[in-house]
Image 1 (cartoon, helix red, strand yellow):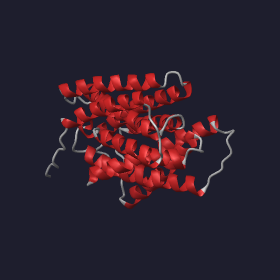
Image 2 (cartoon, helix red, strand yellow):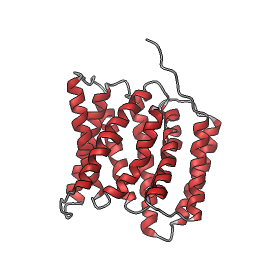
Image 3 (cartoon, one colour):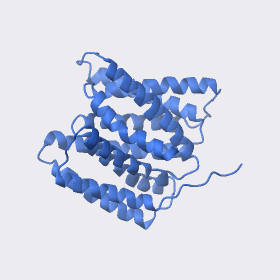
Image 4 (cartoon, helix red, strand yellow):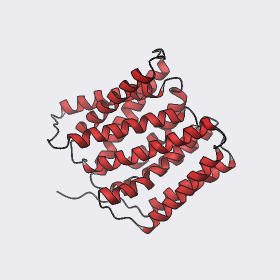
Amino acid sequence: MTLAALSAVWGTQFLVIRLAQADLPPWRAVALRFIVVAALGQIAAIAGSARAPRGVLGLRLALGATQALSMGLLYAGQQRIPSALASVLTATTPLLVVVLARHWLRERVLGRSVIAGALGLVGVALISGAHVEDRFAAAGVALLLGSALLSAVSKTIGKAITDLPIAILLRDLGVVVAFVALTATFALERHVPWELGTREVAAAGYLGAVASTGANALYFRLLRRVEVSRLSYLQFVSAGTGLVAGVVFAGEHLSARTLSGAALVLAGAALHASGTRMAKPTST
């Protein structure tokens, strides 16, 4: 049930971003979303009397910084390509996590994960080739791939400090991402008037409270007992959910070449997921 909820929330967030926040500058939308995360995380930290241990400040800042850059690229990229395609491109994240977790966390890499990575690369090449003549869309593909890489780095860092209180992780994540996003919006988007409607505010509230705070609280809890390279397969299910949501609910159209590339990316992620087993909770 937990995994299904995470996949549904993270998969449909692409459609929410596309439809409800399309008129907002990307960094401003990210800032609004993570201000909510920072506030809820701080409330939870106070309520639970949670405190951060010393010696991990650098990793806490790195977690937020990489997430901030990943979200900024995600929002910017979604202004250039359909939400269905954006969700598929993020399915490259688990393939990148495997590489990072192998080198940084010494997690074991299965042969199927190597094959999965190769399928994903071919799929991305097909998708990129389908948009090479459209520089606007091609830039969107590049932005989403950059977002996927930074997301993989962020997830790997998160595994390294997952023993911290979850309220602290959420608060720090919200504060750092909001700070980076606000700095970027005042520096790069100051020419855009601050006009917020009910739709934009409601979307920021939902994305911040549900897709970031609630979903990440569940994710961090799972991450304490499961290898990050194994848990990252959730991105595959989320990508499939996002693809269906974009096509069915937003009426988005994808070319045959793009769909072929998407099929390879999802096949690679599915192959990686087929070797994944959820660990049982350890008794204390």
